[in-house]
Length: 193
Image (cartoon, rainbow, N blue to C red; front, side, top):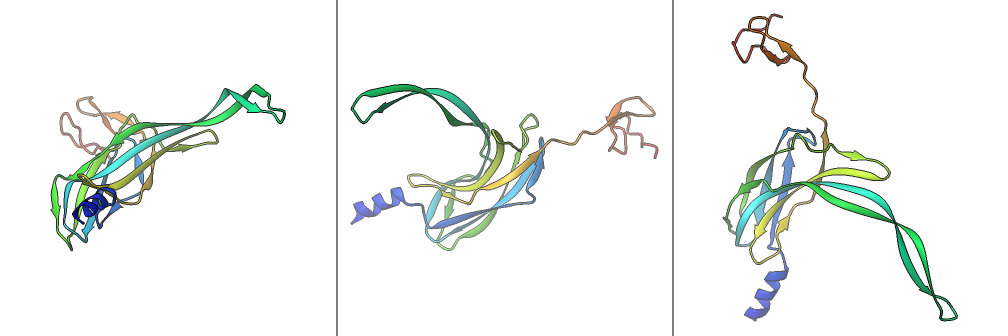
């Protein structure tokens, strides 16, 4: 009986849930993404970690000439060249921000874990066309050694270009500073309105 129980545990996820909460669904390149993972467990679990998984996936449609062989009704083989559409998928950014290291979850356990990750400033914004797309997805994970991980549903977020901020010169020392600053980062003088 013990053997089958251990075998079943190796192929089934623990009786637990993880849900993901974000403050918003649109982020700019270079912005900090912050959220929380709500973890609940119905059984005793030794989690290896509680984390989020952030992925940026680029998909492109390509067309390739391929050789196809088919058998004709009279048994002869016919070879011909045909164009086939393929979708190439590439992960262009991957991050696993940790919300907690090893944690023991008892039956009836429930808690929130905060996490944060930075959308890389040099990354690609969300994009979709007929033949290409860039998508940003995030999900929550309870890592469990020797058993399948517990995962939340995956949320797609929109990532946009960072807004450009004009630079102006300080009227006192001449240092360049963002026009949104109210005082100079160099001399500390307040901007004139």
